[in-house]
Structures are given as structure tokens and as C-alpha cells.
Length: 111
Length: 113
Image (cartoon, rainbow over all chains, first blue to last red; front, side, top):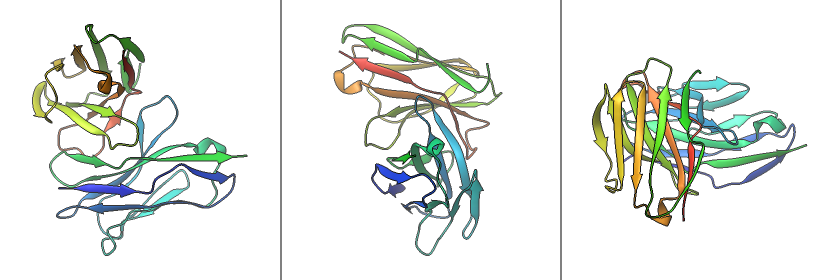
């Protein structure tokens, strides 16, 4: 079946540092890929998405590129802020309706 | 109210209690979902409703009973739960069952004592 593997956290960075959160997937066919973010006390929010190979999703300074050859969708941001502290979930939608989530990576940004 | 709302936000219940979680979406969506979020585990999809019809039930124990009276409301009825059922229960909706993006509520933090 479909699966998503993301790096374990927590990830602790200083403000303005470069962020990478790794995500790899296993799926049949050509899934769509997503990053969701969960801020403390809130539900998940869609951060960005990519629907086909080589697509780059971007939002709020975050980027991720759909790499079919390496089955990866790593999340990056050039300069993190304290307000980016949250849990980040990689997810894929490989078939009719079903979305498969990773375990989440907690990011803590310190001033 | 906008988006997806859930009540209560926190719930503590004994193993013999009966309680219900409520979810309401104000987005005009036709599909609604219940997820269970436990520490260090992927989100677990519990139930899916499309146009008020249950279309998926992922081997969830019968002590969890969903109800979808209309396309805007979703309930999760709880009875005789176990301590391992303690988790964050998230409700989500999407425009249709086949839509790729889901919109989540803030969740109900459930503790079973």
C-alpha cells in the first residue's frame, strides 16, 4: 500500500536558519503530494502541494519539488522564523479520495 | 463561524461513560472525515462520509459510532472506551470524496481514564 516516511523530529533551528524536512513516499501510479502544517492547538492546514513530477509547490516562503526519480518531496525554507514553529506533515493522495499521512516532524525555531 | 469547527476541544471521560464529539463545516463541502491522531503515529483515517452516506470504515472498533445527519454535521459517539483510545480526534471536510485537499478542524483532545 501507499506510505509516507518523513524524518523524525524534533528539529530545532535558530531564527533565519535554512530548513529542510525530508519526505519520501511509496505509491503505485502517480500520486499528488502535499505538505500540511499544524500549529499548536489547531488542526492541520494545507501548506503546499504538487500534482505531477517536477512540479514545485510553494507558499509562505516554503517550497517542495516533486521528484519522481527519488520518490521524494522535501520541504525547504531559506530563512525560518519563530512563527514557523509547528508540526509538519507530508502526505500523498494516490487513489480515489484516500490521503496517506506521514508521522509528522516537529519544528522548533528559537530566537 | 468559518471553516471546520469541533466541540468540545477537550474531553475527559471514564471507561463506562458515553459522550459525543461534534464537527461542523461551514464550507459547503460534501465529504467529511474522522481521523485519530496519536503521538508518533501517522494520522489514522477512521470514517468517511460522502453526501451523508458512510463510504469507508477502517476497521474501527464498534465502541466508536459515527453519525452524519446532514452534509454540514458529523458526530462521533463514544461508549465504553479504553485508555488507549486517548488521542486527538480530528474532523476534516473536502468539496467531494475525490477532492485532493482536506480542510481540518482544531480537534478534540480526548483522555480516557
